Image (cartoon, rainbow, N blue to C red; front, side, top):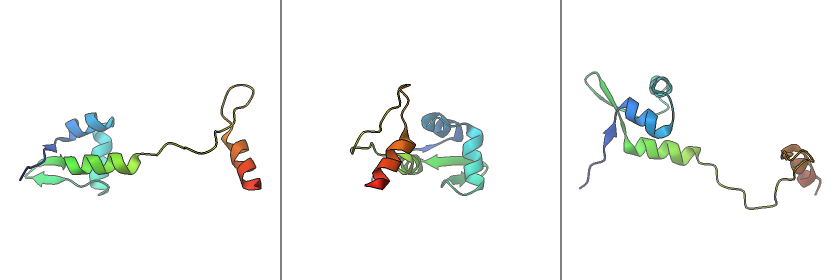
Amino acid sequence: MQTETARTIQQSAQELGLSPATLRAWIRQRRIGYIRLGRAVRIPASEIRRLIEQGTVPAVTGPQIESSPSGRSNARLANAKRSER
């Protein structure tokens, strides 16, 4: 049986690209699972994976979003045209 590594808040924040304060807030709000060992708080690797998987937005593989003459994407226009169909 292989055990997974529990990370400190600092390590987890670095891996996720978040501030440690954000992770502490999520712990208080129970948005992320954690392990408490006395006063030490650790975040299991499985929780890090879960956050990444839940936050991953898949790429769009359908029709392309149209661009305005300025080169910026015009998602509202593309959505409106799709709803007309």
